[in-house]
Amino acid sequence: MSYSQTWDLESIFPGGITSPQLTQKYELITSQTQDFATKVDAYRASDDKDFDQLANLADLAQTISAGIGTAGIFVNGWSSVDYGNSVYAPHFDKLGNLWVAFSTPLNRFQKLLLQLDDATFATAIKTQRLSPIAFYLTELRTDAKRLLDDSTESLINQFDLDGQQAWSQHYDTISASLSMNYTDETGKTRQISAGQALNMLDGEPNNETRANIMANYEKMWGNAENLTADTLNHLAGFRLTNQKAHQRQNYLEQPLEMNRMSEETLKAMWHVVDNNKGMFKPYFDRKKALLGLSQLGWQDQVAPLTNIGDYSPKEVSYDEAAQFIITQFGKFSPKMADFAKMAFENNWIESENRPGKQPGGYMESVPDLHESRIFLTYTGSVNDAATIAHELGHAFHSAQLNDLPFWRDAYAMNVAETASTFAELIVNDANVKAATTDAEKVVLLDAKMTNPIAMFLNIHARFLFEDAFYTERQNGVVTPQRLNELMDEAQKSAFDGMLDTRHPHFWSSKLHFFIDSVPFYNFPYTFGYLFSAGIYAQAQKDGDNFEDKYIALLRDTANMTSEELAQKHLGVDLTKPDFWQAGADLVKKDIDEFLSLSEQFIK
Image (tube, rainbow, N blue to C red; front, side, top):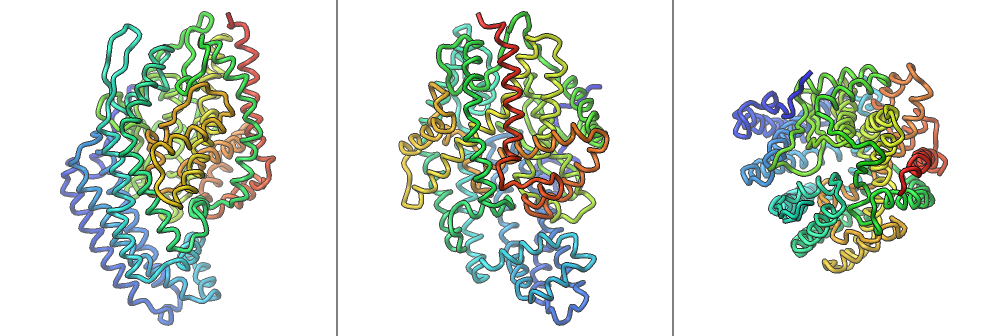
């Protein structure tokens, strides 16, 4: 079957970014927000014996949040395929203002929950309508203890539009305006955008061309360092000031709360990561030999292996990748396979490789339609099918919550990365198992290593950098030169000296450092990878009994802490190293097989 590589946004709001229905949605959200504010102010607990009025307020708050989310994915979707076009700026501004307007009565709703004594609140969240969102309501009530007076909170939220959010959007403007030249293997000079360069760095097979792209990529971001350093410093400055105003003890407290995990769990995870870095050294030494390199640079860590023995990777068509994903999902979960097939058929995926698109990929839910949309760029490489599977994993996760209240869809980023990485593991493992020769298996095992390299080394470098940056930012602005030093030190430490040349301007080039809504955006990826490894091992043991258990876990992801989720569904303690070490052992197994099979191809 042939599938479209462009997505359908018209079914959300017809008529593109100028859709009259989008304008009507803005107006409806405004009206609903005004109604919500009025009803919050009028609420009296003494008149609400059965808590129906409280449940009505919670329902309306979720309806408004879902509406803003639906409008947001629509605007962001159009912006992603027309990257850098200023026509979308007024819409992002409108969405920001809608959220600020809603935040004020939502804060008052939180304080209303806090005004209920403990016994009354406990009774309320046991009622039929409120019990499904009891965990989220408890979080709102707890967070209310940090809130300042209404006028101050409203002012902070308003400042956020032209503060933290504006600086994040400013980074997008910088990134979209950048381009660079590089010399290809024929000696021809070509010009590409920053997004195209990033895609090529991961997929370019020619060593010299890849090194040339890397050198010019580093130079391009170096030329922009003053702009990006200003942006990063002001984002962090706003965040630190806001955290201090809300009585946060340190800069890690908020991201840990957002991910519903303890610092003890985070330390246990990084401890295991640190203790297992040594297993990558023989892998990188072997890869360097297979690539014919005397030194290993940043651009080489996930470079594709080509022409190993008599095997040369073939380009995989989009339709072939789609069918492979559907088939492999079906071996673990028929519901996953049916969902993936439906997503392809209904044009939920934007994958066409063309200029003008935003770099990277994502999945976002369309709450009002109980659908998802997936954005990426498909190039036909061996890793691209895994990328599609990753985003489909996110979408499948969200789909399992369609019958639950909207606030039950508010799962944290770390467990969000679990479903996506699990789906990716299915496809990567299937690719390796389908290999018919040792040479092919070596290439596919190497491609599979892209994820653990990122999760154990690259992501850890990002965490070490941010930890050092926020420590210094508390004492004032950090210069571009110092940011380069901090990043280089973080990469040296995280990669344990395995790279001969690094990427000091990675802090400047990586979008994840500039996302306004999520502080310390990166460490949840490592959590999700290792957590999903445990789930994947369980799936292989359970066979046909796995699907129901997996869906039960997904449905609980916004209903308890990460530690409680792991204990209930996997029977493990995340604060202990054993669980994390099991994931590391799976990586070691792949590395050992790679080393054993690839030895014959060393010249």
